[in-house]
Length: 146
Length: 306
Image (tube, rainbow over all chains, first blue to last red; front, side, top):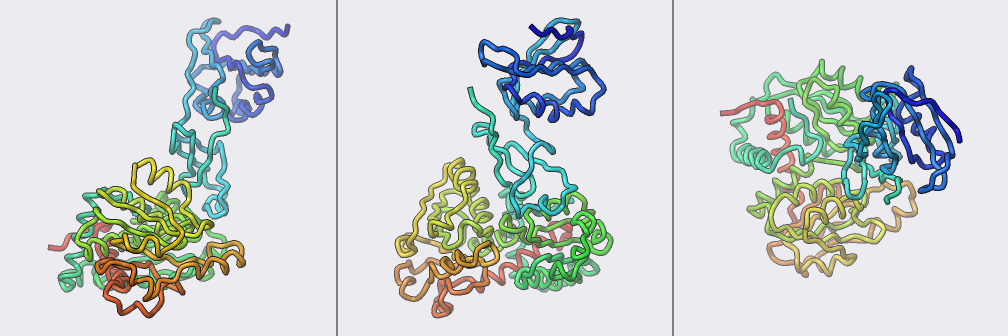
């Protein structure tokens, strides 16, 4: 059993699909933060067989966790304060995604003006459909449903 | 300050006021002859479109204003690699309002975020063409006396035809509109319009391939051109371009009050034989295009004429 030190304040992202932790590390911009991060890959899981876990020691409001709802809503988000789980965050699809996904429409203005932010808005929550703000090209979330 | 990116930027009430203003301009053109004296319209056309550009220019000149601009990307600073954002910041120093056509979808939206003057989307790729929609709405309301309570056939290139997409989005806000979507299999309406616009809003619509099957039921027929510039493959274009040709024989299937609209330019899809048919309204539509652009310029510049 691998032991990683207990958090005092921060978040534990549990039940991440095995192998996805590094992309979440990037999406949450953890590489740009000066805080303690532990990534556990391929941990044993009764429910999933294998899973990844990320522990982040930082004030909770420094993280934009909304993007996790777009990546995989099955991830468990445990909020830690004073060394104990004080809350679990429900993941919802964010209304807007900025520079998370890219428009693939060759006719979109973003295809020639690369300094523009890639902005997608949630067009249909039920179908988990996002559309490019500029050209309205559809992007369907690839996350799996329960 | 307001911009026009999509026909849905205006509420139904605002659209009614805009169309009322256009009808007043039609009835009393002299009243508006100096309404924009001293104002300048910039026409930023990154791809050729003589018709739309001249319509905008005629509208501003009719209002007593002036026009400046360019008519292709080659003759603009875009050829030197300038971004849309930089161009509009510069143009904001030269003009009071601008109309932008761009082959890339969303370019006018980008411009509107950086502009100090109202930006009108004069067509962005295969995406939106809101002033054509305003033209279509004004033509329909003026000639049929109402918006809503009719069956409209939209025929031709429904896949890339942005005028069709914009018109559908505008018409679903009016009561009892039945849509008959007439296209070859390869040029069917895209799924975002079928699912997100028509189905989600519980609109009555059906898709057919043969124009002859739809004609007897129509109050309005909106013909479109198969646009060569939207195809990546010449072979596909050649196969599709003459799929529909509206001629005298087919017009016999239509009712006496049906009107035929077309955003123009036409190629082969409407035979010149029917130009003198009283139901052919596509040249009247061009004239309404000028009136509605005049009304739009006045509205966005917040010019009141008593």
